[in-house]
Image 1 (cartoon, rainbow, N blue to C red):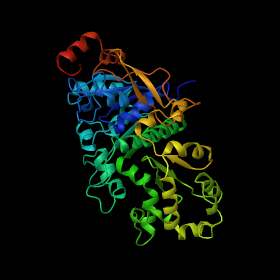
Image 2 (image 1 turned 135 degrees about the horizontal axis):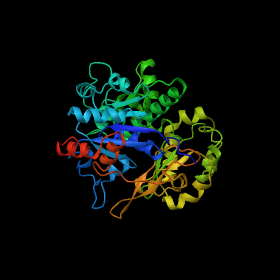
Image 3 (image 1 turned 90 degrees about the vertical axis):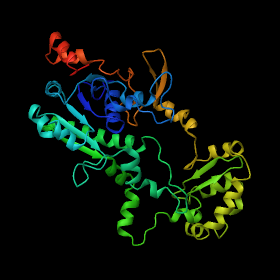
Image 4 (image 1 turned 30 degrees about the vertical axis):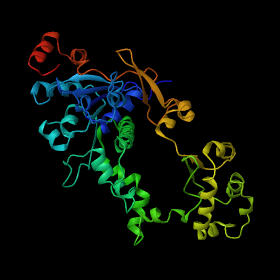
Length: 405
């Protein structure tokens, strides 16, 4: 199979997770992704320590997950010579990918019009916290602030009487938003093939939160008094679309959205055949009307045995249900293994770490054919500068001046 982005050169001026992870997805599928980093410092994510175990003796796991397969060019863009080197590289590129705030890009003279003047075919792709219009376009924004907090997730997932808000998971908004940015880049590249012209492609963490929560958001805009927290206090209103706890503390999620057909099967699984024609539960409307009663019956029954005893009958039942998995069980899920979603990354120090492929595949393949680890800071500086016309003596001078490294 030919990698879908083979021949596409991406110049990435981005930090942390959101935008760099979009670059990693492109690298997975054949793009040449050149990460621009400050000499001697690099992406701050290289040295970020938050105490959650992402740094091991063998690898910085977050760097490998979000920067695999890239090249690294160290350039001081505040120096006019460093900026000129970047622009010469942009002339050879298909995509410029950035997470810098608008005012920082303006200060560096790297706005869309600056790059399109040097390369009219460039796709200028950008992502940030709150978008690129409005009074707060320059406000700093990360996953937990712009996506989780301002984007409504923290409120929607926190019970009204909770002592503290629901805790965000690392990079949840970053990785979902990266898929949107990848879609925008792909669409812009397709348009360029039709027209020959570059364009700006963009998204934000806040916009992605609104899209992901669009069901709640749409209803809230049109239904007076809509209370998205109602489910916390009336979880048994829909007894066939909720979770039930087994005797050993595992949770089973039922999601019988169209329950009439699977209803008899559920009664059989629960070994409660008398419920099938019980007039209190014989129709969908009746099951909702008597949801508290039915929910209590199901909860008591499922709570009477451990999961290992329920497992054979549930697995034999063809219906939309799932055991709620731990993160460790997710990593061993045979469906993910079949898709190739988790693959080994072999590092220069001889270690191997597991990383996760993006959720898209081409011709049945979602992981890179030849995985490459994240680059050391400036690992490709000399080779890339030589390629765009610098000679060795110039590179030595730039290195001595701290412009590259």
